[in-house]
Amino acid sequence: MGFLIPFVFLVSLAHLSVSSTIPSTTDVSSSSLSESATNSIKMQYLEFANGDKIPMIGLGTWRAPDEEVEAAINLALEIGYRHFDCAPVYMNEKVIGNVFKKWIDSGKVKRSDLFIVTKLPPFANRAEDAEKVLKKSLADLQLDYLDLYLIHVPFAVPYVEGPFQTHENGSIVQSPTDHIKTWKELERLKTEGLIKHLGVSNFNERQIQRLLDNSDVKPEALQVELHVYFQQKPLVKFCKDNNIIVTAYSPLGSRGINKLLEGSGIEVPDLLENPVVKTVAEKHGKSPAQVLLRYITQMGVTTIPKSTNENRLKANIDIFGFELDGCDMKSLSDQDAGIRLVEFRNFDFFKGIETHPEYPF
Ligand SMILES: *[C@@H]1O[C@H](CO)[C@@H](O)[C@H](O)[C@H]1NC(C)=O
Image 1 (tube, rainbow, N blue to C red):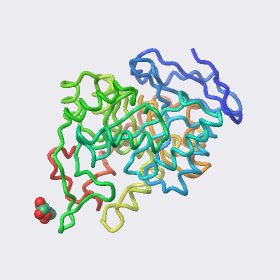
Image 2: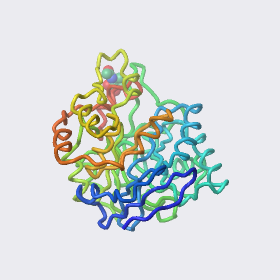
Image 3: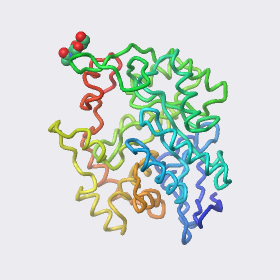
């Protein structure tokens, strides 16, 4: 089933084709290990209904400042990353776009080899604002189309080009949104060829169901927080039942979140120090981070760890050369603790957002 794609810098990707649209856990874990070779990084993919493939490991770019992100994207491309997760609210799409442009112009990578995701920001979560913001992302990223466009969050704030507007008491100014109207507009923009696949992020099951019930183009992807302490099993099952590919953000927890919560008194547990994770890691001779990522992918979920550090970038994508057994999977499954780390209401820049009618959590 698999075949090798020759790659730059002796990196090769073993290409695991999967037959069903959304593979069951069994399909995903039956990786073709025979293709493992020295100096190669294996990759697994999930398939959309039309056969397009999404690499199961991508690179997150949240809270990656310009100076760091340029070097990180270059390194990631050299290492073999092809899936990149962006967003206008991360304020770094221009820098990232410059790197894509250089790599594509030099012929080192083809546009069709890349899987680029970006998002409709909360300040444009309305039918009338979607087109200009999508076109801005495309211009900044220097691309003609996106592989996947997500509604970033279900709630909305007024259109701004700078920081979100706040009331005198510090709470954020909210704005109404109608998901169905926004979605219809995204469907239209997809028809124009600007988007290959449509999805949502941070939506709850009820909000996704409403889109499923009221759309021509069904949501094909959901990006949510998912890690060993917050495994979202019912939501993942709901998505599999509806042919929605799930992408896990903050798969390793997040130091970035720790910073955002400084002074709030909220403690974020360190996933990498979890004793079960450490034991499984020792058993396989892998790092705790690699075990956390392998666990998520064996759940049939794609994930986008963020790093700007070369060794961690390499380790985070090098997880398909080993497999967790049933016993490992069970112990890791038991670590689920319902601990949500990304709770928007706890972030200063979203103060008071929990009163928005579409607040998802
Ligand atoms: C802050 O002010 C806004 C606008 O006056 C109001 O709607 C909101 O309820 C206030 N929030 C708090 C926490 O008092």
